[in-house]
Image 1 (cartoon, rainbow, N blue to C red):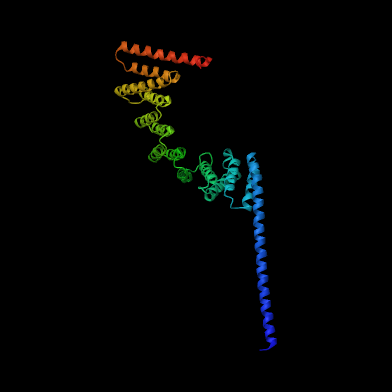
Image 2 (image 1 turned 60 degrees about the horizontal axis):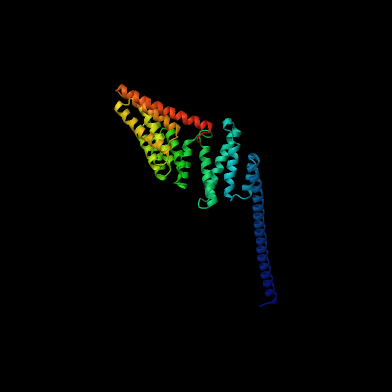
Length: 334
């Protein structure tokens, strides 16, 4: 074996090793450079985020939106930013200028960023979960009649809100209203009932359900919901007062109601209003309705003597109500 040949192979080997080392060093330098750039961008992002939040708090939404855009440009993984960016555009949008391209573009940007927030935010994180719910709520509002007026797109958003918090009745009410406004009364009824079942301790669920049935002209289902509400909160005079007023209204204004039914409604109304007054003796409106129910009873009475006696009682309750009203106005008895 020649020395020259060995020397040549050694030199080639050293050159190859040197080349490999050079490549590794170069790669390390590039890696450090990329890492350094990422760290710089992270710092810039946090700085811009802080500035954006200050502008947002001052309600300078134009400046805030620009700074939030710079924030996500430097760090697109900061999920929370997308909500505030969307909300800044949302606040810049003017419903009164609907139809103007520049203005309409703002609500589209708001929707886009709300959607990104919903996609990126972690529902299991306490802070991010709350902001995710807010993003869904504002997204739903963006699809409302004052802005994009797109109930078809609003529906899945509200459904996601219900899935996110199944025990919150307000979300069910939003979905039910969407269906009711669209004429889907059967679907609306199911959602109102679902709201009541989701949180039966919340009396507003019964009130909302009763209101729906009233709008549909279904008195029997409406009064059943009102009576359930009163039964849920037996020490609250408001529930029994609502029952009494509904019975009076149906007896006095109901179309095509038979006298036998009117008598039944008046008696049930009197029972409810008596319980109301028992719970709150100085309830002025209840005393007024006691008089109105007695007058309705008088109209159904055939015996003139009994009729006059009922009217006299009605006047007595009217006078009581007026006396209490005067005392409250002058501060006496408070």
